[in-house]
Amino acid sequence: MLITAGPTREAIDDVRYISNRSSGKMGYAIASAALDAGCAVILVTGPVSIARPANIGGRLRVIDVESASEMAAAAIPAFRNCDIAIHVAAVSDFRPKHRIRGKLKKRQALAAGRGRLQLELVANPDILRSCGRIKHKGQVLIGFALESSDGVQNARAKLHEKNLDFVVWNDPSALNAARSNVTVIGRNGERLPIRDHKSKIARRLIALALERWRQQSQKQ
Image 1 (tube, rainbow, N blue to C red):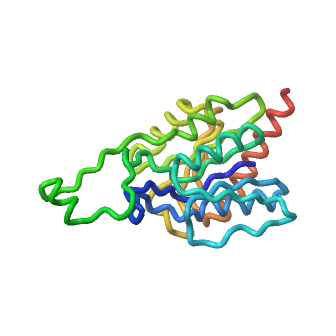
Image 2: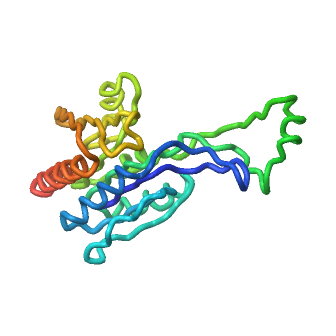
Image 3: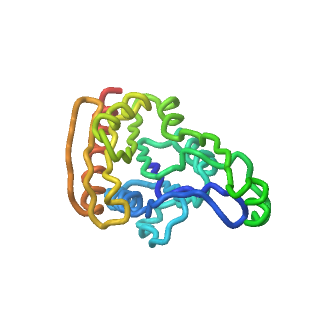
């Protein structure tokens, strides 16, 4: 099982970066639940300040990354050999087009921009979409959708656009909380709202993923 977790950091210079508020708690809870269920897990993680899941039975491999490009380089090849992938990471959609070497001096930046600092941003790789394009028969692909408005509708659109089996709509108000409010939406029309501790949501999601994988394996 492949699991991505945490934020990414997109460097402006050697000191500053663009990131987000993801704590990695949900992704790490899912990795722990997968290990408890007997799975071998590849955890591709952005920078977080929480303890790693216990390496039960030596079945956990952790790949530390920082940027979205690094996460893509680790996660997409790993997905090819996985049965199930759950992409929980909050990947930055954009990065600065040019990384400045050293530290950008405030005085120089403001002088050049006449009192303003302007950054040109470019799109990052869409890891989930890339996995959806190479997904083969029998694989289960699950993504998370953090939406502040029209959550279920936007999540359902993401489900079909990125060739997912399930998408988990996540309420942004619970980013750093112990509990979350999510709705799991399935390709077959399933809609399961869950409001609980992240650890319990993780166990239910792993059970759902394994059941779908077994169903698909029987059809082959």
